[in-house]
Image (cartoon, rainbow over all chains, first blue to last red; front, side):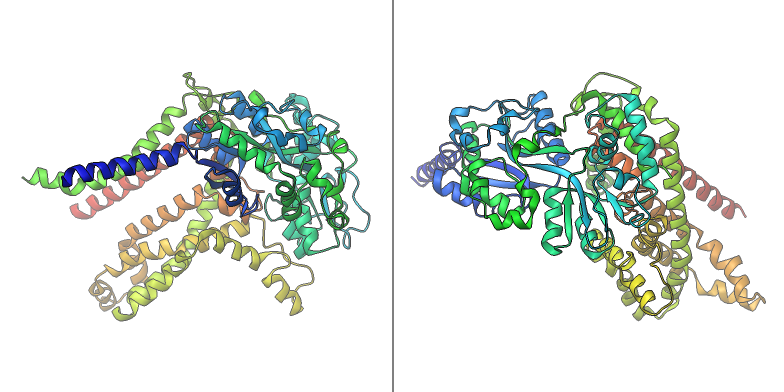
Amino acid sequence: MIKKTLGLGVCAILATLSSAAFAEGKIVISNWDGYMPKELLENFTKETGIAAEMTVHATNEEIMGKVVASGGKGYDVLFVSGQFGEALHKLGLAADLDHGNIPNLANLYPEAMKLSHDEGLKYSVPYAWGTTGLCYRSDVVTTAPSSWNDLLKPSDAVKGKTTMLATDRWLMMPALLALGYSINTVKEDEIAAAKAQLIETKKTLLTYDDTTFYQKLVSGEASMVEAWDGWCNYGIAENAQIKYVIPKEGSDMWVDTMVVTSASENKAAAEAFINYVLKPDVHRWVAENILYKVPNKAAMDALDPKLIEQYPNLGLSPSELLKFEQLRDLGEGQKLWSKTVTEITSAN
Amino acid sequence: MVVSRRIVLTGPGIAWIMALLVIPCALLLVNSFFERGIYGGIDYIFTFENYARAIDPLYGEIFWNSARVAGITTLISLALGYPAAYCIALSPKRRQMALLILVMLPLWSNYLIRTYAWMVLLNGEGLINRSLIGLGLIEAPLPLLYNDFAIITGLTYAYVPFMILALFSSISKLAPELREASTDLGASPLMTFWRVTFPLTLPGIAAGCVFVFVLSIGNFVTPDLLGGGKRTMIGNLIYDQFLTARDWPFGSAIAAIVIFIMMALLTLQAVLINRRDRDEKTV
């Protein structure tokens, strides 16, 4: 009798557990830390009844490594930059999306459907987008920079007080743009010309820096840095003398996207999550709290105009943004790029 | 009976080393003979290409530069660590534990935080430069950060405790009678140190130097933060291949070469020490 009760009890527990796992369809989301509202998951679960859990990754490369190694098992939604979404899709690790489950795609700007890495958003949905330019102290740099050459061939006044981004794609970009080449070039002569310039530029740099460059502007250690617009805004928030400019040779257009893994057992739930993020009030939070532009027209229209006054680059229109080339996965060209970057960073 | 006890006692240790050292290193070696997939990942096609790429002089120079930075760090650590270890070993037993805890205390806080602390101290607008300018000793800030000086300072700071611990265990084992005998026979303190203490603590010196050198040459956080990314060390190179370039096979090949060089050096060191011990016994 006791045995039987125990057996029934175990069955009941197992049944509860499995129904929790299947019926509610718990989804796992991996995102950069602090890149979405803390209460977003809770509200999402309240509204949809879908349980959700968040894990964090520090970089695209980190989550990419995990997903490539595991085939994506254990993850449902990933936040990655466009070119990484592209690589995941080419590797068969990102699932095609059912737009019927994501009606809020209608909130996006029409331009957001025309991303070069994923025309028509077949497998990725943009979350935030922006540019890379020069972020500088207008009280120290008296003539405002207007060209990438102001960074690559700095005047004596800013020599030794500039930084460049350390990740390969953005480390090479200023020289490629200044020389008029594509930011995705894999032509050896173009890469070599950019390399020669960057080795010269290295002698004038304070550092290569991906994480603390805006703090260096605030402290006065640096006067002009290569920066992502959203990060420059963090500097502006601390010192109103800090300004952001897109050089005349242009910028890249970076996009952070949401993709659903092919390994997801809860694809519909994952799509419901993406749909939830695209709600105007949810997506507006991103612009207001992390000071990034979002590709959501309904959200951007509702943005406090004072915020755009304080951070002018938030006001860049999607059509202006789309003039810039998007970073793409380099494929076989990656080997040439990484060797070139090593040659630059190890040059004396 | 003895055999089974030996297995029981060494089993957990061997299992630990197999699972967390031997198998991962073997996987690394295997991966180094495959191709990088076009979009990252590994294509299981056998190739020597990664090794052919790795023997490029570019990477040899990076290895040489890393060895130079690690070597200088090791020498400075030895110069700073030996007197410290000597003093601790000769201090009264009841104070030794407290002093050793002080040596290890910095290791209780996070490595990154300690590295950032050096950035606060050394940067152009930092504590040291501000103070020197404030005192009127210098006019423009000294370039203390984002160069080899900063990297070596950071590495020495981080690894000198390992040097002190290795030297302490060697010096404290030294019988005081040996030094007394040397003095009684008329040797000056300096000669006693050079002819008695120093040679007998060589195993500790070797152990400490190996610790500091190996830890320094593989470090990638310090060159990144204190070197401002302007000095690529071998650790950065491997890190970049795995993470930025997503070229695991090539990263594995470089790592495998570094492991082989380090193993060769460690074997050489062990052989030299063994020979010395044997020579001493025959004398």
